[in-house]
Image: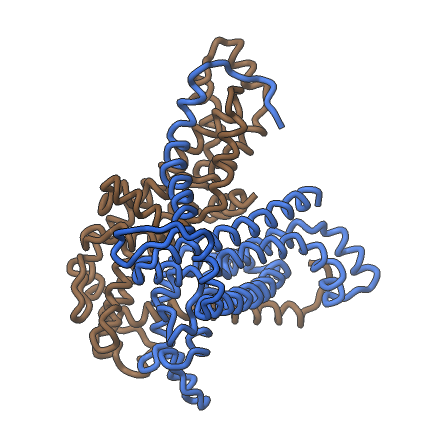
Length: 293
Length: 283
């Protein structure tokens, strides 16, 4: 879409764009190029000399078992967060859409976790599930479960999944609710007149019409689980016990800043960038479809 | 409602109340812990009945910010750092993206498409994936431990630029034509017509960006190496760094409540704009 009415000036548009371009070049393009460049270099431990090594950093990564393990951990973590989080939010959104009285109260009560920062969420859940003090950990003991996320990798994974889902519920909920409210009432009423019950209507009409929203949220949740959960992992498990909860973003940070292995960290960044680009393209492709609908 | 089904209605409320309680439970526990003394909150299990220490704990952390053996700067100071950076990020993002969207929509000039794509691709580079080279740029510019270092690298936002671009495209052409006939230049048009029309979008975006800025963690973790420039997220993490024995959970939870308060209030009070901002910025 283009504007018919325009203003004319040889210099004003550049001046208007200048601040954004300056920040973009300085803090986006320059670092991204550096990451690309560094990913094909090998630096010795003291940073004294560097050597051009083509794709050796990448080859080393894919031969490295801890990296492949981090990939698997991330895949498990993000699918758990996406699937469980989306199901739970959809459930709540469907019932909020259904009730007449009190729906705005429920809505307010469900959206504010969005405001809580990931690190706070991490600290909060660590307190709840602290093996010695945590109130939930204590409750689990009554059911014969010896909760210890410091020793048990599976427990640590459950901890970060719970925290990540809790944080993301409000976002998913809002989008599902908006999606549900945009479904024409007449369709549902027609189905009701034809004798379809609520259950049947949900699976034959509502859920198929929600597909664009669901798909969009799926992508958003995967991106969220890949990147935004760094603070949750950093605050709770630090990738441990062992490397059982070491997700990719955390590994980049760990290898690059703590381990000082810049070449490997840069190569990992490049792989992550590729993943984001693929996901973003997917998301945009899908959004065009949503516009038709 | 399509049909009357009293049982299903009751069931809906039951599920929703259950859901709301599950969401609220962690915060309730944090609240209760913040009202207790250090000894009470170190009991296993702690009691779920609020104590009477809330004001004392809040005052203690606001003034001193120590938890057990781990010293940090007062929570009041950390909240100030968070507030200043959140405001700078929100205002910065909105101003630079509004100006660039204005240029992209209302002017035609050589390089326009190139600039558009340059801004567009930044959508695909979250700060997490380019963290170490960006850190290097900031430290080379000696912007560590400054508000500029905490905020400027985060304010270039393709999302906001797109939002404003989308919105400007829906503004009727006749308005710009009329303004031109009346002899108004581009800046006058921006100030007197476009800006007042964009006010709802600005507020909605402000809410989202304020929360985004307040909740930053990874970036300040690297850029703030001195205690007096810690935002609240980094500060909380430092408070629990001492291990089980050293942590005074009642103080940590009091800090946590303080950390949630400003963005929480923004969401609840400005709910309408918040929802609009969230939905719009994903288009």
